[in-house]
Image (cartoon, rainbow, N blue to C red):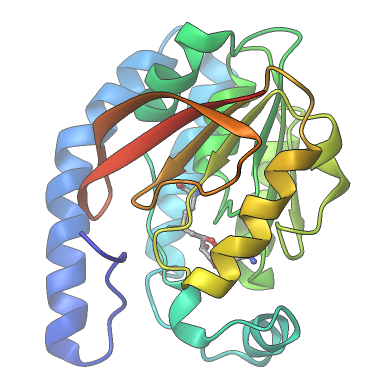
Length: 230
Ligand SMILES: C[S@@+](CC[C@H](N)C(=O)[O-])C[C@H]1O[C@@H](n2cnc3c(N)ncnc32)[C@H](O)[C@@H]1O
């Protein structure tokens, strides 16, 4: 798959909603089961999910704040298409590589913070950076209640790269030039940090490949590439 689908006509929107509904029906119960023993995290997860019904993040970026942020980052509107990764998928990628208490998780393309919330539930410090301010406005207080951080900004610019031990780079919709900015930041990570990229492999020479997995996202199956910072 090439990019999370972005609705443009009513038919596109109906198709996106259908896909999100289908993959949501398959993956939400697993997320809920994974979080069932952590009631605060589960409550936060449910609030984040329900926020989608008040205001859909799957609509194209047409608001001034998003367009301004996208332009300032040198990206196009198409590069901020929305999609989510189930919590259990991200935990399945990173937990075998030490995600848990003492780890510092970073999602530099964080959306509303579903993955940030999941990483925090493991006991890790967890931070998300999201380019579109409205997504941050929907998720920030919810993840903050768990002690995680979701902030607005260009995820390729954050200081969090200097200390992160686990990084999930969900750059499916980003073109080559934008992905290159994230690739370059991998060299700033501490030695031993684990990086997963979605859809597109990393190009950074600072990374050694670890594994490749097929995972499921809100828009369908995808390939995840796992690396370790040399
Ligand atoms: C496919 S969503 C993934 C959301 C989340 N990581 C997940 O997997 O559930 C990608 C997000 O990256 C955001 N994004 C795109 N370019 C970005 C950038 N330069 N910095 C931060 N966020 C960016 C988009 O607005 C979108 O919300």
